[in-house]
Length: 248
Length: 264
Image (cartoon, rainbow over all chains, first blue to last red):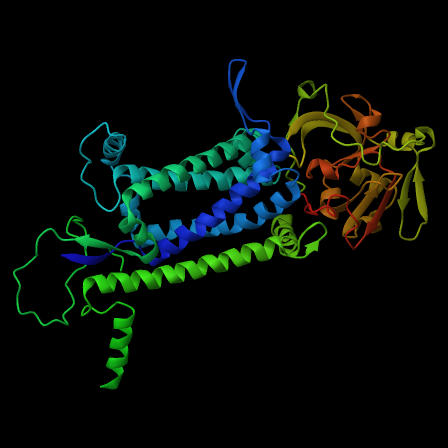
């Protein structure tokens, strides 16, 4: 028997989907900026393994000679990124959603089991609630990364007025490197996230837009009784989730 | 009761009625949610290209220009004479100081011996200052991390006259009370505008020395601006003229789409 069960609160869906194009705009404009001094390389000893970025990359994406435009976009969209992220954190804290998102003491072991399962090295997935251990770690980690981007970004943006902040990150040049590495982290997150969403299927993806998921009850919860048809069900919470979610 | 019927109708249409078969509820609610989602997506797309294709204002899209000016208003109050750029022991300064531009310093026919700093005053007529007169004023020197708008930075060591000392010595307090200082190369090929507070910041100097020696030509001899609270683009080489104004003086890179303030 199928039922609709609430999954993602409206506020979280809004902030998730606002963040997606805004983060994209931040990364794109960041690349326009980075082009002007594209000195980062992965080195082992004297050998350069990879140089960020090859010329073809800039050419294909048309990123060259656009520093001024990049800075303008970056210093405008940073506000949306910052406000949206801040509201998200406040919302999850005050609504209690953080309980579903923050790693608990089981999450690290569970996250490892999820990883092994997803890599087909383990047959069974650990039992999970709304988010599994790997998701809790990822979704909390990405928020800490966001905070890191804002702080390192501020340190690069105002390295003298906020000199103490730049010093916290080991100085101006180091803050710029951290800022860059965090961006690589978002790209990695994005790829893994999209692949996981594809594997998780339509019901899971749809919930991020509609807010609810379709839950299949394996057996009829009660014997068919002559219940008046207009009575709403007592709860819409899926049975595999032991705690009723507070969102509606 | 007529009202509940309308309500009930709406609930059925939008798939929120429990009377509907479950698949109909799913289909209708999915359709509505995704329609709204798509509409918002189109709206976001329109806004994005509205900005990208907007009319230009000094080399950048007008909405972005306006918001850059807002950023300036937000961050300008953080500027303080107490916030100094970190200084370094001079032996940590680079020996090979990076040269990034020669706009305004590459033209032929410049005679360093005939050079004078030309200052426009409000009521004392033009002021003409020689390098020796500047060198007679107290010298300020330090090494700091010079920061280019392109993203690179380098510790370099500079010596010269503090701009505020220069103002006080020549009795230019009234001029320096105006909102902006404008500076340009003798040939007017490169020009900058700087807000008063940044110009009077204690580390802003009219430099005639680099790495403990006379300023080289490619670094802006005979006199250049070193202003740690700004990106390199505002550190004008080969200063020819200085004026003061309540309006923003024209600025070379501002006209090419960069932020006017460029404050660090």
